[in-house]
Image (cartoon, rainbow, N blue to C red; front, side):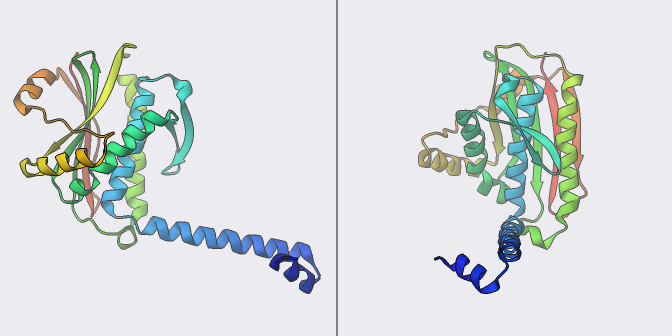
Length: 236
């Protein structure tokens, strides 16, 4: 007889005790999860948001078949997350690898560049600035969550304002960093065989983009910990 059986035998009413044990177990799990969430720093929250946003962009721009996406809930709204392991790992590993640089304010831009072969088509550009990398429990997260939710909703709606993409389009993730963070990126590349950061000449890259139209998506300036703006540069 195990410990639970002993408790039930001593109490005489198994149904009551099972309910109590179940509630206590759920309360403990909830408390642990709440503590885990409250320990997140602003840089971690930002990386988590950009991961969700990139999945949502891939879904809304139909870069992959709809059937590879599954519905999840984040920021109290439904979101679409790609289920393909390789795609998920690429997005997650790439963003996680630069979290420390975001924390140190050595990265100011993160882009999702859509290309058709070697031709840039669209560039979803996140301009970010972490004002204070403090822990979640030290600021009003509900207000920030509301702003992040608005970003995701705006991304979902932006697809209707742009021309459909060709089936041949692909994407890559780019970052704009300070000159002295190049060594850090090289270290990250050496630590993870799946992530290889490649330096791109800024002037040549700017000429390749040459946006014909800029579509503003959303701006966040009211948060005490984070400023962020998302625009789409359209090259065609």
